[in-house]
Length: 326
Image (cartoon, rainbow, N blue to C red; front, top):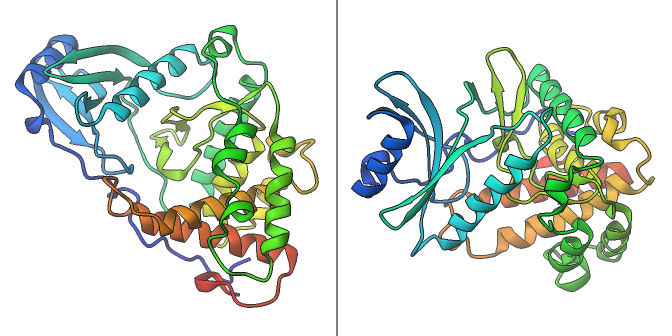
C-alpha cells in the first residue's frame, strides 16, 4: 500500500474540452429549448470527461433542468453513436439501478442531442473521502446485483462480452508489452487467464471510474456514462474503480475482498484484472491522444502505473514502482 495518498496529475473535474451552449448551431439550440419547454437561461458545462462532445446541465427560465449531451453528426459521428447507444442501455436498466435516465433525443442543425435527468450532485473528490467511496461502492453493489440476471430489453441489445474485449483490446502484455519489465511473462500469464474468469451472462458497467460517478446532496452515488456496458463479471469493474482507492492510500485489498461483487471470484481475479488494466492503460498512455482531451495521456499513465504498483505490492515484486514506491 502507498504510505500516503498520491494525488492525480489532473483535476478530473476539468479534463474536458467542450463547446459552450452559445457555440452550438442555432437550429439545435432552438430545438433543445422547445423540448425543454422554455428558453435556456443557464448552462453549466461538464468539466469532466475525455471527449469534446457538448455536455451541460441546462436550466430554463421556469427553473426546469436537464443534462444534455450533443455531438456533431459530421465530425463527431462516433460520439453521436455512443450517445444513441447510451440511450438504449439506460432506457432498459432495471428500476433499482442508480443511473440518470434519458428523457428525449433530438436531431437538428446537423447535431444529435439527448437529454438525461439532471442529478444535483458532484464528482467525488480525489484522494477519495471514505464516505464518498463507500457510497459509490454501495451503488455499484446494488447495480451489480440488479444486472446479475439482466432484463430481456438489455439482453436483446446484443451487448458485447467482456471476455472478447479482453482478448482483442486488453492483451497488451501478451502482444506488445508497454514496459520492459522482468515480470512480463507473469503479467502476460495473468492477463491470459482473465477472459475465462469474467465470462458470464450478467452485465457490468465496464467503465466505472470516479469521473463517471456523481454524489448527490444526500450522500448517495449515481453511476453515469453507460456506453460500454457488456456481459462480464462485475468484480472487474470493482478492481478498476479501486485503483483510485489505492492511490488514495486506502486499503484497496480489503475493499475489494469485502465488496459483494468479489464473492465467488477466482483467487487470481484481482491480480489478473490489474495486470490487464495496467497493460491497456500504459499502452494508451504511449499512444497519440488524437482529438481527445489533452489530459487523457496523463490520466492513462497515472492509472496504469497505479494498477501496476498495486499489483507489485500484492505479489511482492522487488524494485521501486514509479511515484507509488513505498
